[in-house]
Length: 515
Image (cartoon, rainbow, N blue to C red; front, top):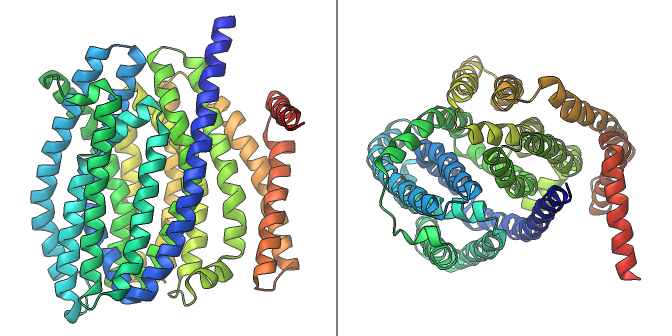
């Protein structure tokens, strides 16, 4: 029993350390990323930003093959480490790398054929920017290929829970992109083309650094083992069902982006790109927590520690929502002033897009741990087909709405509604697979979340009504009060007695050390 407690304490401490490290990284990336976006908008202009976003989105549409295999890489590498078999880990990594190289070759052929056709015949691109759009496409395609062959290395870092590698490499990545944003302002040639090529160079450097780090620190990443053909086929079978879910995800994101371009042009794509960047920055705080906890979910399943796994799934869903709510609530309330402060002259629709996207993120954030739990079982067919079918319906329904004259916001409202439906369906399928009762999930996740979200939202609305002025002091006061109110709701309504005792012990320990 004492040994079990020590093991749990060790894993909890590892999760906490990794989460704090990733949060520190995320704060720096948030500041750098938001400032970089402002510089890029001023340097390139709204139309070129929109062109880069939608053309890069076309390339991303062909990345669903790779997206399907990301889960395969992380699942098999982490599972093999959980089993404690070094030889199996080497074989798994070599097989995963071979699979990603093969998929990269397929994506290159399909992307060049389908992507260029879509770019030349369906996209709304100003004629004088067609040449620049072509080079943006080619640079984005090469960046995607380099990213694809980096996935096994990223999976190894996550599986070993060495999050400091992500911190250092991603900080270099963000710093390099900020330098590029300033550099292109001095260029006399086509700035959009130079911007795309320089971003490709950063991706190549990232790939080299990831490879060197993993080969130096992880024995299985030295590619000494032979590719296991049977394992290769097994991974493809597992990834085949993931592919359907990835296709649905691409449809929900880049498919919608293409629709916005067809109906409204590059300016609305620019608005969406800034809204999505805000979402990525904010949800990054949650994904960092989930990145730290996900390997533990898979490893506990591999070691048949089901109760511990269920506890981690509950904690991940609950705390992910709480973390996101503290940031999303003031952002939703003050979106208009925030985008003006950030971009000076933001594209139309940016603030309304941010509000709906953040609501969707709040709904979707609880699905992360459930999805990882299904990946841990290795049986993803039913989940991917059912949930993927629900998400795929977003694109045709959005097209119908826009064809009937609906505003651009209609596509994001459609995403919100279908994301909520997909979350419930996913939960209904996964719970029996991992031996978890659905009512336990509702009692441990949805009920506490509802208890916190309802009073926090009401309080936030009242605060916004009491502080309607748009200036920095009012923004700072709104953010501080919303965070304080949400934190109070979490403490008194959203966590149990044991969690309160844990927080008190931690606080007492910190204060004692300071004394």
